[in-house]
Image (cartoon, rainbow, N blue to C red):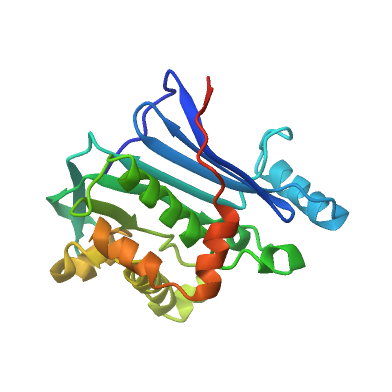
Length: 248
């Protein structure tokens, strides 16, 4: 598992793009950590009020923009992803653990579509954002390759994880739904060009709510390139001229 570091000395903006009612900002810091945030800047009062409610419920700063889509991606000096699994007995008591080291040149820390998290699908504004989280990831990875921060043979890792907690109703109806959700997440990452790092330990990984995955840069970008013509146009629409505006 990787740990995000504290504040860096400086960062600079590589993309700051306005399109329709949204803004996409992508920043990279001196440790080669990319942070992307897409937020709403339109005038629809219903949507604005809903965002305000969310920020209040999440106890977030009212002045800060709510990221509808967020991607955080880090390049070397990482050299491995460390994974540790607990082995449980039938009563779900930890009786042992097993650890693995997976080679890694870059790690996808966050790949969030907060539209789903905050149940904003009902708004018309969010419909045009379908697939945008993948587009943003493609933009970031292409920039890292262009800047020679990573090579086509570089290994990108990600930990497919999500809540395995069960409600009382789910407990009554067995645990299949939670497992299916996790497997669905794994399959989604597979569509992006990732593969399971420890396929023989999938059952154990699911029990630990963490399925480590990896993919070659060339394979992930190949998926980006295979997008439909409309997706390619969307990438061109979102991606602006590269900027290097330094910020504190």
